[in-house]
Image 1 (cartoon, rainbow, N blue to C red):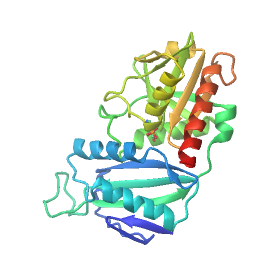
Image 2 (image 1 turned 135 degrees about the horizontal axis):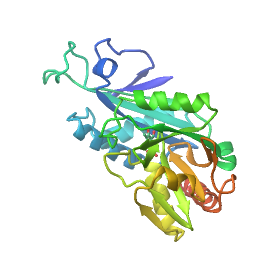
Image 3 (image 1 turned 30 degrees about the vertical axis):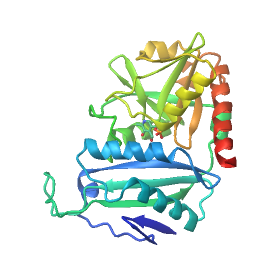
Length: 281
Ligand code: PLP
């Protein structure tokens, strides 16, 4: 298949030098953008977040947003991607190894490629289980950086327990999960961690919050504790292409009735409608 390499669409081929700063330091940022029936979902929001991540790590993107949008659309077209994701990453470029930023004539490496991925309909309909794990990440979780070792270790723990996610706690507070945001429902109201430096402000999270508003479900962007999670009526996680997945059990504790809850089910239905509308227009 083809990949995007800075401004050009070329054969997928490794061009990455062993001294790429992403490879050596995790010195870069990324995005995962969902594709549904050949359409990008919330592409502008993803690229805005990419620009924000770039700014926060003092990296200048090699392409302007409008050019990038054009190229990404071209990429899914030439690869004929219907269902899946585009993975996009930008590193600080290739330079002789040294922790400090390389000289100004070093250009960033932007790559993007497509990946076939089915929708997670089964998980959305049936739910899944989760495990808890300590949030040992740094304090800039709002930046979507390539430094994912704590997330890797957390997700591995989930897999070893046949769980869909590992949910992070920092002290008493639930922050998010290894690659998704966490929501709980209590007495008909929804709670999710505020969008600050402790979490990544998920694009799916934002969509779910706006769907709740449309459905007149109250959303509280407030912290909640591990105990609140265990005693919640419902728990669900959100992420690109995963969409919204109900969590039925966390560690050994059954959540609510142990089956997908009313609120999550309503949100999932509305989320699918949003995607359908996008595909039609
Ligand atoms: N939180 C973390 C740590 C993530 O890695 C991700 C996505 O991969 C999310 C949340 C969900 O973000 P989004 O909905 O933009 O995919």
